[in-house]
Image (cartoon, rainbow, N blue to C red; front, side):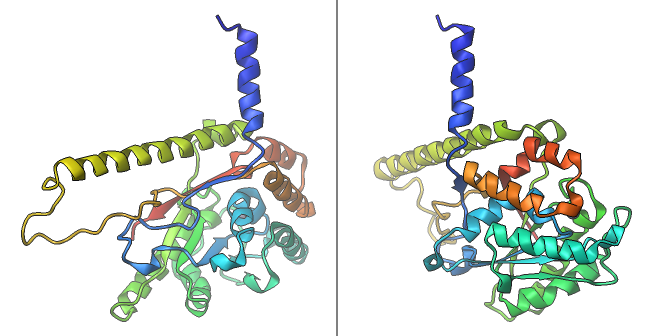
Length: 307
Ligand SMILES: [Zn+2]
């Protein structure tokens, strides 16, 4: 019989052991569409945030994973922050803090912009007009030929109305682009950062092994699915063949999953923590509690927004 102590020691060892290496699932945001459509991979990605510090507080696992990929992958990450965070008159300071934070997260100076639009002011009691958000990011999406937009979901992690306004604006832009796109051209896809339920938002280190178990389980069951399909195709070749005249359906991309997941290792967590501390004007005591307990310092889960 295993003693309680040995079980506790084993759990602690697994939790800490899981912290050392990062692990990603579908880190190129492959769509589950046909493998014959070339634009299902993310190559030009635009992250849209609301305030200086959002990038380090909420999106660091994704930024550090994407900026550390080899250049030969051909993936570019761009970032637009829609306000200077001027609610307390600290806009100029916060702009500088954001630059330092992005330097630490590995995002090049040519790939980032911070807007100062009078209609997109940092305000915890005001929503932003989706039309204004759409028009603010439109030139970046068009000019950079963005294929994948990343931002908050409609809960905005913290329910901040500025965060919550962005996905509606991005969605509106994509709808507008779809209407005007020439036949055969693609429009960007939108992914939103999943807001976790309150009990799981502050589970800190535990988020890492839980997310990793999820990723390993997904990979395991996907392998099983492949094996079963191979066996069925071999022994019952007619079963999976579409009837005569039925539209031919291409297989899903084998690496695709619905939810891209980025799990940081300890070095990426330290990178995110250092980036957080560059936002000196915001580093009140409870920010340290946030760093210690928030799952977003370790794990980002994305979901595609169907438009
Ligand atoms: Zn924010």
